[in-house]
Image 1 (cartoon, rainbow over the protein chains, first blue to last red):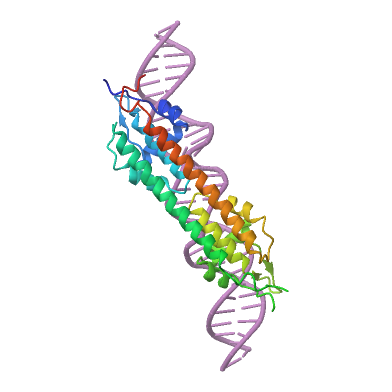
Image 2: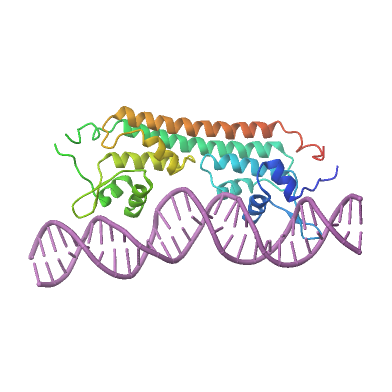
Length: 121
Length: 121
DNA sequence: GCTTGAGTTCGCCCATAGGCGAACTTCTAG
DNA sequence: CTAGAAGTTCGCCTATGGGCGAACTCAAGC
């Protein structure tokens, strides 16, 4: 089974982003690429996983950098689903703990009395 | 009891941000202020609530703009705790639904076989 | 009257997350 | 061979979320 090499365009389409974004992710270290003889980036399918996870994580306030750090624990070319799922779960835990902090802020707000002592009047 | 008027610096300290940030939030519409005779911003305590909520929401990927839209439903000078808690809960719901999408992405990943087989399928 | 502290506006700077066009190369097909 | 599609780098542009200094005003206290 040959490792299928993917081009920027193919990764972009599969991940639902633009080719520009894919290049940006590579520069940024979210995904890895090697170059072919003509200096064109070649990716493997794991790039798509990384991008998908990073995008979903972005939506819960996790930066690309943070995602990249977590994804760095997964070897390029990895087909080990356990690693991917583990990384995903870590991102989810991060997101949940942030939600918990938001919840705590709301709870704190709910117990504040200074809002009731009427301002005005 | 008079409406306690707060200065930029007081709000900043109470909300745990810089005075610069407070001015930014006002320009941005997250908080409201009126001006005194010397053109200085004067806030009420609700500005502190708005900032606290917006900051916590930011951490779960909710932008200041989104928070501002939700907070816009609360009248300035509001001492109605129900409104604040309701807005907080809406932000939490938003955050949770984003987490759910991240979870769905991970689940999808966990059921993908192309990582194991040859992607060229 | 003068200093001091806190406020004001203005404007430039930073990082994050890209978009977009220019100009050029490389690959593939006819 | 040649055209077109897709790749490359470079660099400027954008929005978001602020930081920071400059220069100025305002109110209070000595």
